[in-house]
Image (cartoon, rainbow, N blue to C red; front, side, top):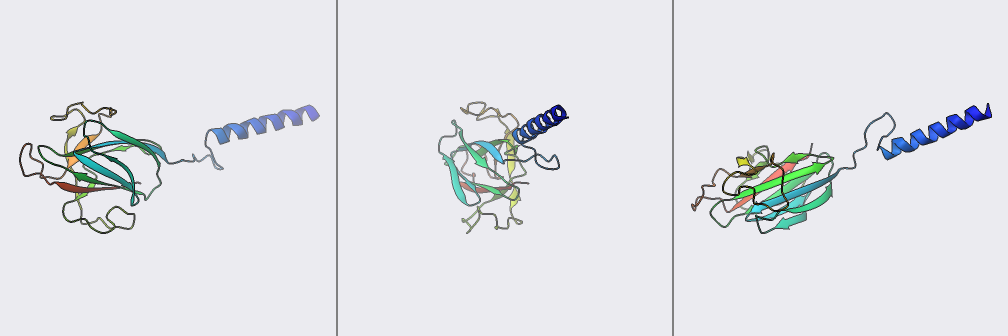
Length: 179
């Protein structure tokens, strides 16, 4: 009988250890840590905010920047993009506990910077959807972004983005709420 108790105790202990290592909680629900790596670039300059806090910025479209963040449902990722001519765009990929890319589902605003635009509590219901200018690899950027490989990500901006013209919105504000 003592042998049987020891076997059960060893089995229970090793099973519990495996469950903890696998990230399982009571009820066999996967425990998300929220850790997600975001890789982004902007043509020409971008600032990425998480719930109002600046977490990443870049000023060379041909080199993506990356950061590991902890995300939760309801968090807001917001980007301020600046363009100085020819063609504008934001390109972003997130991988980890949350997986998403820049696409036409992102909300955009053009105009004077609004107070709190990059925070959770801000209401973006009147914002429009971004416009996609094609998947990673499209002209004029092609696949020339160092540290970026996600072909599902799309270059996005506002509707005013005519190549080589002055009809490009120089500043666009982007938002995505994590679900």
